Amino acid sequence: MLSFVAFSLTRAWQGFWRNAVMSLAATATMVLMLLLLSGFWIIQAGLLAGLQFTEQKVEVVSYLQTNITDGQMQELRDKVAALPGVASVAYVSRDEALQRFRASMEAQGREDLTRYLDANPLYASIEVKLVDPSRIREVGDVLRADPIVRNVINIEDLVERILTVTSILRTAGTVLLVVVGIIVLFIIVNTIRLAVVARAEEIEIMRLVGASDAFIRWPFVFEGAFVGLLGAVVTLGILAAAADPIGRFMVDFFRVLPLQFGSLTRDLVTLVMAAGVGLGILGSWLSVRTYLIR
Amino acid sequence: MTVARLPSASRTFRRRVLGRVEDQATQDRDVLVLHDVTKQYPNGNLALRDVDLVIPEGDFVFLVGPSGAGKSTIIKLLIRDEIATRGQVVLDGQDLARLPRRQVPKMRRKIGIIFQDFKLLPSKTVWENVAFALEVTGTPRRKIRPAVDRVLALVGLSAQSQQTPAQLSGGEQQRTAIARALVHDPRLIIADEPTGNLDPLISWEILQLLLRINELGVTVMMATHNAEVVTALRKRVVALEEGRIIRDEVGGAYHRED
Image (cartoon, rainbow over all chains, first blue to last red; front, side, top):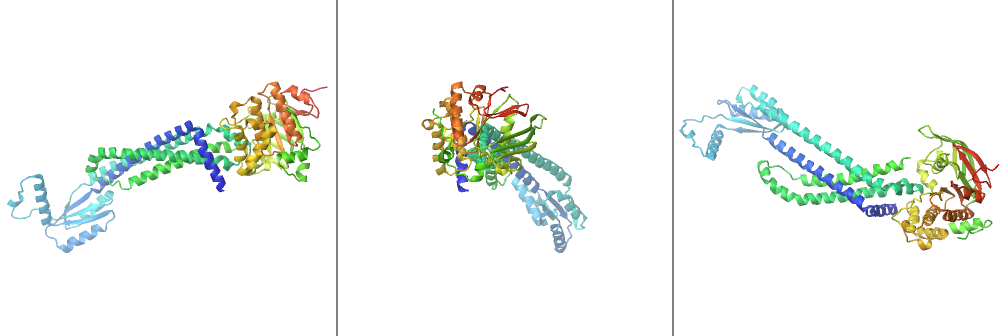
């Protein structure tokens, strides 16, 4: 068994270098395809993060009547917090609302006119953040139905329109990624097939001298895996080299949208490695199979 | 090239040269039996019709006939690239139609096959081309070297063992192919037009080599259009025409002699 693996690896290595032009062409195609795939993967990841960020901004604000007790307020908070899709419920008292207003006026450099007022004109409010923005209408309805609620800011229509757009973008991104994935799959498998077909005579001779299927197949499978591995390493090298300039270019974009890219590098390495080696193996396996089935 | 004439001592010589130890059962068995074999291809072409053929151990058989007579089909049946539509193909006591797929490679090692176009790998040396047949069948490395050296000596190519096919003459290339066919110590050598690409002098050289291998006890079946060779040698001749055996005579000529 060990000698069989050694034999296959040796033959794979020889096969790669004895047909260097073909093998390097296959590797180059592999690199281009993996770059294409990872490019779309990065765009898709950015798109998803951006959409998530946008959706998390959705907040239902409801103003409360002035004459309510703390108990009533707490009851409403608990009721809303228990609703599905609610992330957090915050209570903003009238004093806090006034402070916020003053702070925002000051930040904008405008004169604070509230000091001319005898009393605080603002209402206390409950601000509900949502995990799932599509639940906004339910939450709004519950709030509106409660007698202590004065009014709810009606942004449901706007949110639902935004959600329609984000879900279309999500679907489009996924579809695009899948289509690119399929294109990459076919091109890589076909490139490797060409490399195998170029050696049809060798396979034919192996068959005629009585080589078992395993002895014919595995050297090619290892060779395909090697092409995939080499392609993946080169691709990751290019991506690593390109990461800094692209990052600098994107800094402004990231300032506006503080996206979380922590897992992206890990995901990308996994994707490129798995796609490269996996498609290399798949391509060789399928190509050799056509010669073995008789 | 001198031909070793050792008919009486052929068995021991063969054992010594090719390294095979046989039991009584394999010696008495016919190497090849075709029984009522009909082959129809999926496109409807009837390539063989009710072919009966028995080739005993040690025989030398010429398979003759015009193109499309069914010679190639018989060879394809023997290496089990095709399976007979009807009838039995029995190689060394094994019915090929009933042979499990996994056993096919093992069975093919009992056959050495030689082609008109040699089918050598251009990037490998003579030695590597012959060793290739053993490497890809999982032969341990320590057994490969002596076996390859032995067959290269047998075909007279020891001196050229480090050359590539491109550096060899046509005859030398075919002798390399013969060495590769022999290295598994086969029971049957199938030669498909082995002299088709060679000039008459070299053709005779190849034929002498095949005859010598036959004298060492290996059964040889040679498909050919070379009338001169067939008629001169007076071996067994099986003539095919339109998928039927029309003549099977020992000591025959290429053409019918009445």
